[in-house]
Image (cartoon, rainbow, N blue to C red):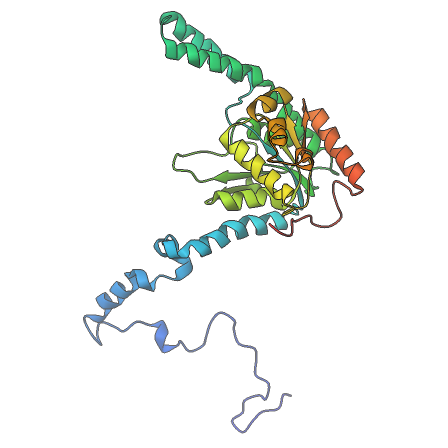
Length: 328
């Protein structure tokens, strides 16, 4: 029998109910109408006041300019926690144009413009659009190639439950869709980092739902591109691709991050888009900066180059521990 005090209470009381009390606290009941007829309406006014909203539930407060720091932290933290929970420790990041659709879609656009031009043979704007559409059709082979790269990365692990090395893209259409799709075809998890822009956009349908993220800030999105990256593969692309590519190369150049393989697929496109040798000859980069990347013509060549790079480096493509870049 338990010892009791002089009031009959046990020396060691029973553990309390973690959710309920036997006797309610005074503050758990509002002042009644009987006590003050105006009290209920005043209390409701207080409950509805913006100042009474809990800070983490107050969207208007979180949208204030002064809350930039909080929003930046949340933009980083949510994907970081979910990626970690899913066991995603390493990624192969694929960049490329949103405009490089699969060949059938690109062909349809050419055919439609051709028909329109036949009806308006003197329309110079249509002629230009058709010329661009034909060049995009020629590059649409990169859609299938990026899809193949996604498959190669996905099949490098130990099965569909192995999330140590996954494909990561910006989550949009075109090349990004293709890389996600290749991993999806292989039954692997695949990551998409979408971004809020003033014009509505949608993620591609081949991203794993639990790994489809939506960022407010480009900077935090690019940070997540690199934080787990074991290689970056860039297909022909425009401003967005260039932005991501050059930031990556600048961080490697300055050793702000550990060097990783950077592969540019499509030598002819990239050498015309950016004259890297001109930069070298002009003395604005060094020869070792030119060696940050190399060219490949297809997914198989790019993937084999990545494997060879790691063999030369003396470290495995998939280390036993996390590969988060320390200085990002």
